[in-house]
Image 1 (cartoon, rainbow, N blue to C red):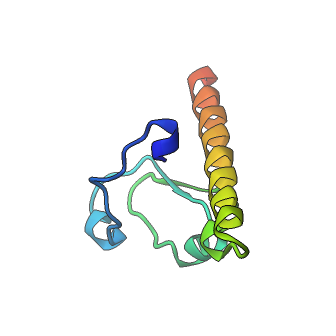
Image 2 (cartoon, rainbow, N blue to C red; image 1 turned 60 degrees about the vertical axis):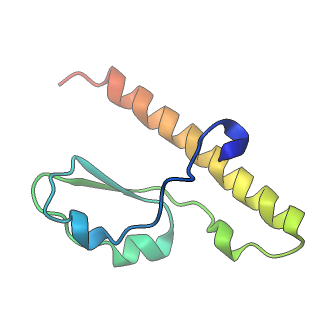
Length: 92
């Protein structure tokens, strides 16, 4: 992510249990295993599933694996931009 100017050095993985009591407009899963294990969030939460390859399963050389991570990262960026654009054009 640093390659595209996003510093994640202060971030870490968190267990979703700590967030279940918070209100969520959307919960987005990006791999099939997460989609299958995703809990029910209370309230008016909309669950979306965007299927992407799991880059952690990439094989090959370090360069091959890095390219897989970059490809999936870039696909996610495009999908987020499309989704946000759709939200902005939606008028209730």
